[in-house]
Image (cartoon, rainbow, N blue to C red; front, side, top):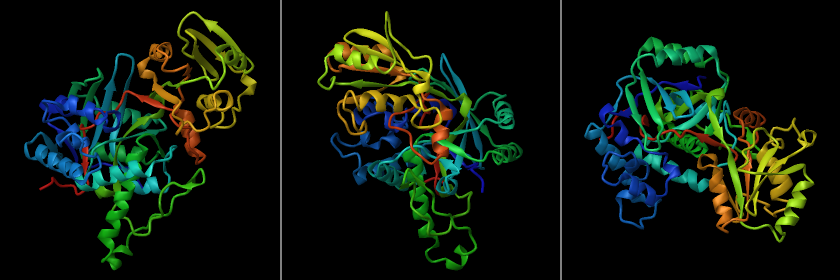
Length: 449
């Protein structure tokens, strides 16, 4: 069964693309989204964060929020701000920053492949966050936020993407964060078929970012299967039935599928995704701050860190250049902590990660951080903010110590996914971020009334 399908995307007209495009819904709070969309009725935030159009204080999970999102989608379609392509397409999507450029493919990723773990994941999801996305997808009848996927790079797929981007892009603009966004519509049936054939050579995909969106799309698909086929048993018996997925880290990755699939080209059997070659993706460091030294003095903690490996003071910020090395900022001084190579369990995909090494050797035994998911004493800072942001928070007295990490590699994410396990929390920070609003997938493949 195919991992990806073309689909009839909904996208902004070229003249309004820059006004429509918005940051991902989950990187902004309501106040930030309200301020960013102020005076711009075309902003996609009216769909992805529709509470901004309701009175302040409206709970973000109130039914009227999702209804407002549907009304806003219908308005933008009716006004011609968003238009739907007439036939199933793929879309080449390029993001360019001053330091990095990557080109991916916007696709309908197979829900069935996700269920059988041919689209693999590496994170647990939270039910409350899933529930919110399920209600949003179901009420809007649309998937508005893409999942970021990775695949093993192939020469054939690279060549097809290069060819797809040979002409002028259909959408081309600078985003508010300085990232340049370019989109090419791949509508030619021969080119679409060639991409599908090249994708058939790729055995699996990996979720890089967007686990909750993928899990929510699966739940919506399962509900729609049940509703569609409840009274159609003879028809249902002619279609394949998905198998229950394997467990992840001892916990079910997704509920068993008890009803047959819709046809694979049905929009509800796909989730909106952008797929990138794994070696093109950029992962930045995901650094740690801790609010206190767990009863130790700075000198005592430095002595304890010195027993773990080489601890050397440095004259400026320390950005690790290889795994097993950490920057440490304490008492207005940077240090470089380097663990002995032979002390790292290189054969274990999880234990060898720098986030695991720091947790297992420093955060838990020395600073008493038993569960970084729930401990209020620890905070996480994406590398895009820079190392000075770490020092500033320690110097202010808000935090006591900072740790700069070497970025987790995409190959490590894939290795953890392949063994059916999950990454430690806050392991990866992918940059640049995908924009919301460039391509949307309607679940019923027709504009809303």
